[in-house]
Image (cartoon, rainbow, N blue to C red; front, side):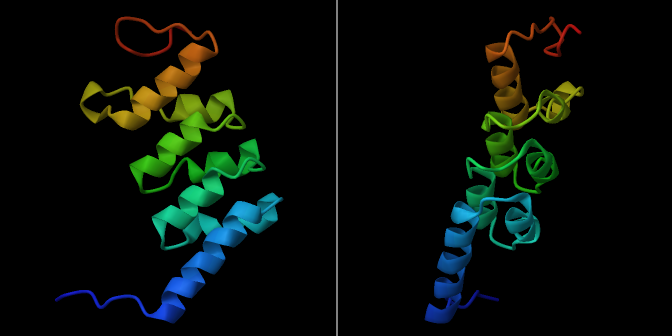
Length: 119
């Protein structure tokens, strides 16, 4: 079954939500976007420079891998959150693991031959 095109109202609502996500200044304002059905809007909330370590740790569980990459790259993400994005199982590793590793290496974390932190 083909998806109907979005109505002008639906597009306007998405633009409004995206603007709200980008303009949010507190975790309370960002929290509704944790479950927004539009992954681009969730991404906009994640990339908000005012996003705290606490809200970013919640966004780290986003279903879309691209949003988890943005969490790994966000300067406000805590070390604990970024470490949580690493995959111990080599078969599960991908771009999220790579982004988390790059972030951690940029902060001086050393990795072993198993591609996991030495500590």
